[in-house]
Amino acid sequence: MLEGFNVNAESVRDFMRLGDPPQFIELCHHHEHNWGLFKARGALMFENDALEQHLAEIPHNRPIVVFSEDPGEEISSNAAKMLLNHGWSDVHKLAGGFDAYLEAGLPVEPVSKAIPATKIMLL
Image 1 (cartoon, helix red, strand yellow):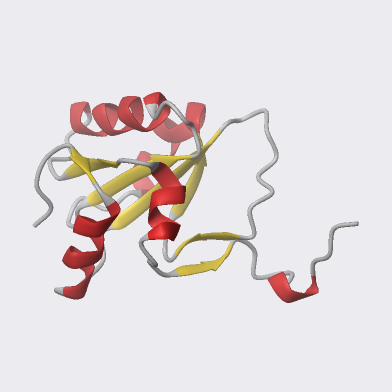
Image 2 (tube, one colour):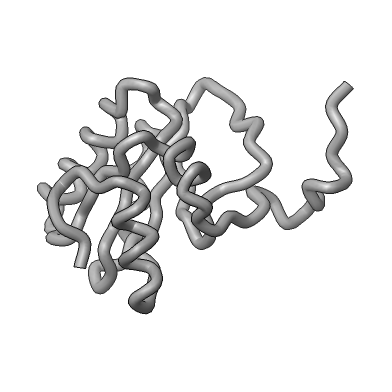
């Protein structure tokens, strides 16, 4: 079990080694294009101001780990608190966001299955 509201990527990695991964929720700003090629494996990606519209997609039977690219992590904290207020009981904010997730060597997958990441080239 993940302990505490704020979790670090190492504790998430240790938890994942025990069995089922948590449900990751990655938040992005609604007015910015997500240029990232990868996301946390199995993550649900939502715009930060639209999370409440997607509550039906979020499972209640798994730990939830919320993160974003927001350097201050305020978006992640607010989203995690909102989930707690809506009845989820096992919700955590990932300290350091997606950067910490990557640094811990946690699994990723392409953001879009339509275009393989190896085919994308920026000029």
